Length: 206
Image 1 (cartoon, rainbow, N blue to C red):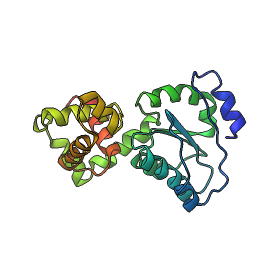
Image 2 (image 1 turned 45 degrees about the horizontal axis):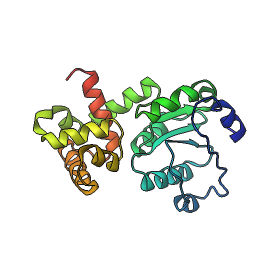
Image 3 (image 1 turned 90 degrees about the vertical axis):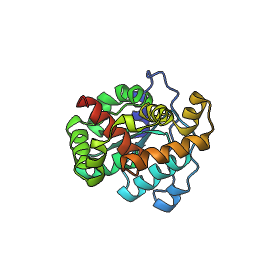
């Protein structure tokens, strides 16, 4: 999607739009690119998958709670899984973006997901089929301390560590400690896995 089209689509969204044309599409350059802070990042994934991954990794390294939407040309399901594991919250192909991007933006900004339901469902199933996923499915929230539950609630709202710390009046270092404990207890390595599994369990009524 060209930048002019992107600007046109979101001109009435209520967001301040800052478009940036990247000078280099080489993964090392994208990994070291200076990234501004934004409510939502919309990344055009027309470049090679490695380059897109480097740019997303750079954003998440700078802002762990970043809300990311990736727009591209007909994602394979395995590509969508890789994006979700990396922390992407919205996935749209170019045709869908023309209609859906203005609606996806506020939802992702609020901490939600904008991913085709069948893709998200199969992704969750793929996590649950692993040993870690089966272990998490059997875990009880009662095993969490009160503070861990409060931190988990913040993660489920897609808050960054600093935002959770401010809400709970604790240090960011303490939040990181609780996040590490949560990942260990649930047997997952990434926040995205933890969030998706918790939403799946809530949806199943467990």
